[in-house]
Image (tube, rainbow, N blue to C red; front, top):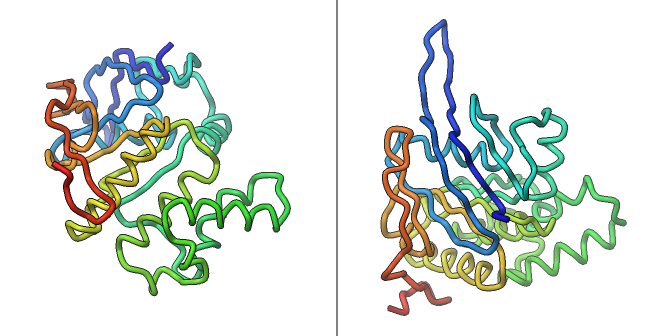
Length: 240
């Protein structure tokens, strides 16, 4: 059974009586453990698709099956529950609380979980250590580099042990070296079994994935395996 199955998915937006189609009948599947890049130019519908896949938005017509469950029939409360339990998000703008420490930012999702304060702190420390930031526990975002902020965001995305990590232009605000370090981290997570869905407008970034699903004007124009995959190193360089 695929983790994600999309059947004739369409999404329209209506404003003042004018209906604008954004996604025009998509069909695809994503298996557990895949690393898929959703690629397309600005306005192609890729971010709208990510929001639907991540339970942040709903489709207009069609079906979305997540782990065999028809998500398109669920109400907002159930979608919010699935969003908190099954997915983690990494955004271009990091979305960190500016006055909170790295540790406080990472453990935010655990506020809705029945854990003691000590358990939350220990879990947060573990995930910050997993992204190489155990020495930045008490630093606020203003005291971190762009790459460090994104690694804090990745630790936060991982802390509920989600089935899927969505990365929306995760290197967009980073220099090339920091961007490659983030891609190395995502590739490593995928190597350990995490399903990664990367949204990007750059072919270079998409080629770090194992499969590229290309969208243009709300339709899938290409769905191919990456033949010459870019492999990043921890030092912010390419291995090949």
